[in-house]
Image (cartoon, rainbow, N blue to C red; front, side):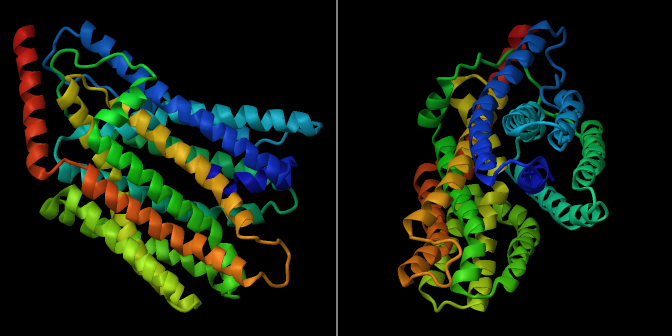
Length: 441
């Protein structure tokens, strides 16, 4: 709910301009991105101290699960504060309140989300199982988004005479559901990787560049993720303009939800089998290339709402595959980093990856507006020029084609973890851990 309805709350209830809200999102997102690797480093450092102080080096010392309990209530409180509209504030004071509560929410979310994201790396070393966890995460996020989009408007309608109260009560309801979800995860998730000795190293901010440059799989995932996110976000932002200006069929835009939901449900079933049979490298580069080619073909086909909906439905199936398994691939990057350096930094590396993603998200939103200006879009015009319409089509279809081709390049030419290499990495890590365990006996 926080991401989907916050802009409407800011403009319609709190009373700040859309431009001011957009600037807030950009500034806060950049600040949030900086916090992610810092939080990852903190998680690694705290765990390192716990390992050193542990009496029994052969037992599982939980690294990330405790944060699901510790971070659950602060993030809920911060989210509720975001949807409070204090009375009697002037314009500047409203902005200060919005900045303070939104940034607070972002920091508390980072506190729980970075450890949550690192869980897959300490739950299993099996690539196929990590892919299943990654798919489950994506599917759960989709279900949450669907429930929010359906239920929240229904709740808000009940408070149409008092929107401020409606938003607050709705956030409290969803906050309670979220809190129970965190508790459920806390009591049912199990960390299975036994740490033999202290394998963590202290995080430095310069590690961001070191990991990106030296860890080829991480570089591939980062480049592909930024490209895919940019394509997805720009396409999502441009859809309303494409349907209204190019297709003259704004009423059909609601069907784009199906082009996201149907591929997600289909992909959630087939991805584990694809990864098991072909490995993450081949699964990722083949699906990325096919998606890029479909988008490229779609760009040159006649402008029609049904051609667009059908084409994006098929392209989205292949686009969704690497997006669904990327979180498991980050866990593989963590293993590879330990293989190279001898130190294990789940929190730091996941935090760095989250930093890269959020920077990409921040600037993708910014470039959406810039792109409209470049193509000459005029708000409120009865008809856009031919060049502008072509530009909108390029932003909506051409950019995703380029983005997925960049993802193909990253996965095919940069990612170097074949199934055989992955086995070598895991064997080396396990042998190293066993040797450290022998030294501690």
